[in-house]
Length: 270
Length: 270
Image 1 (cartoon, each protein chain N blue to C red):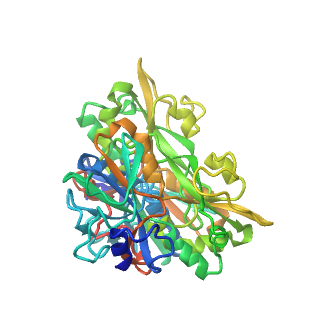
Image 2: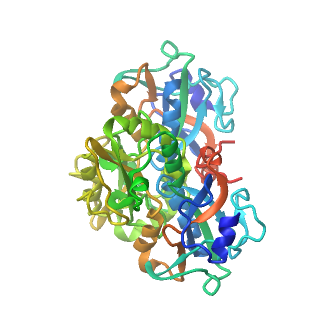
């Protein structure tokens, strides 16, 4: 996978638009004693924290399932273009690799991102506004509680927002519905959703850029992959040792394709 | 399984306390065209709607996974003691079997219930108050949104409440955490949780009985298996054809044991 090798060499500054058709992942890497709580957090909150894959304790080369990353010399510490370092829930630094901070006790988690349903929306003639205006999608903190798990308590969901005409919302829902592992269909929509979600002003996003609304458009909200990083912030001093994440916009590109995505995120019954 | 046969013969009036050690299930049975939306609703809301098993379309005898119900002559239409009939989201009747209403288009879903973690709490010396007072656990509607899926929009979570001393809450959380398929650990606790969940008075539950608080106790809230029935109510006229559910307290007893429960509700990665 050329994009991962470019990321390793630090030849690229972001992954947006690279490796079309392949799934990009949010990244969270924790000391092993918190990995069970984080796994439970993902299982209990699959819409905002859809788990794609994880690495073995202390081993930055082995990903489960193995179809997620296929090259044998994969290295979780270098193959993402930029990493955030968290200490006691605070973002303290951003680096291009984790070689000097990684320990043999760290476990990595790969979380689905909205990149994939955006491709599907474009194919359906429903291009997200922020692609047209070349801005960053608007993201908001909400009052919707994350279902707690172990040390991860007191966090709320983050949502991303794309404007659509009210009469297009059902089609937008239908297009995104199959992609459970990439946040799936919107969680709310319409102007009345602002109060339900606890968003005071659509013009003042907490992350990303404010979006332009055209006549007759309403806000449509999806769960957002920034949520796991805010769960780490909310855990704060309960976490000893360093936590790592990707720098937003600088994702880990996987070998999962958009075609794989319909089967991901669906529990197996056997 | 003797309790299911007694239910079939209508020899029993409720399943509380019967077949100790075996998992009792909430039941929801829908016309097949809504089954994919309901499956998505369970996948997106595994804390309030933990899916244990489902039946094949029109076939009341075959449950997947087969370890959930082991007797070959199982009949979903008779082996639960009492059934609720819903039309356009309204509860219109309660019957002891579904033989005259079942169609070859119906699909059944078995949803985990809190029975199992209550056994574990008793074993840990943390007996729920409503068992001591022989009342029904207090349940409340909340403002916490259910993640929508297809026709299932606009619903909110129902919670059950048990009083505990604040210093016991971490132990209560630890005891319940493994049982993901039975709602798992509490979703919130403490007096400040009332405002976060949108509960106006702890003394006025929406279902069940008000619970007595002793000195130093706080309310502890779990997601509740009544939630799927309220999702059907919220869908209302969007549903054509009859929907069936168990009558609360009159559950379907499965062949899953409490020991099985730790592995249930955890997605398989392979």
